[in-house]
Image (cartoon, rainbow, N blue to C red; front, side):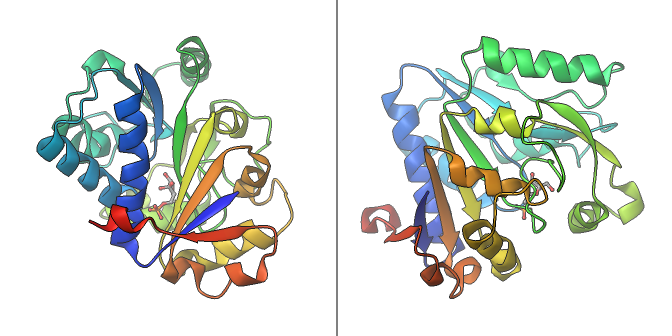
Length: 259
Ligand SMILES: O=P(O)(O)OC[C@H]1O[C@](O)(CO)[C@@H](O)[C@@H]1O
């Protein structure tokens, strides 16, 4: 596990953007796994900015989102379809047919999950999966206790997750009870993973990830076994934790990425 320390959120986002832009620029075709939540918003801003300034093209990119709420229509302002359109898709030259998210309003959710899983496999798998980290260790919407062998599935959201995400809704009652999420195995099968961790509120989760045991009770812990994972964390999230962890090493952000 490689850990890149960023001074602040902006530097974290710039560093992550640089990694993604390099991959996109050098690949003939590439499948990106994308995440929602607050953390990647700044990164998406950098990608859009780079696209406008440097004309980085996304014609050859396919995107696969981690998750979607059950019951929210793609045009609902709180759906992840809407979020992705607003923050990223709408601003890039991605081909609409190359954008994939789980369909949270499918009448047959189990079939939807199976199809989404097969779709990822049939499209050659995910090259680079972007992840945020939940305070309880969730990745995607895989809540504590989710099997490490799980594939795309419907999940009942943890109350703590609904509470955390209620900031985007008018009230917690409006936060859906269920979501479709890529499973733990789906995520782990990605060739490369980029985990973004920002803010003091994530310090506990980051510490547990770095120092704790690998347990299904803390889903993100399995990432320690991934052969190609980079964690980018800002100072606020790192606190003084990382220095106690002998199994990881810390590199400063590439100064070039600060420009
Ligand atoms: O970036 P945030 O908003 O802290 O969220 C962390 C994680 O929680 C989720 O938003 C799900 O609750 C994930 O999609 C995200 O990666």
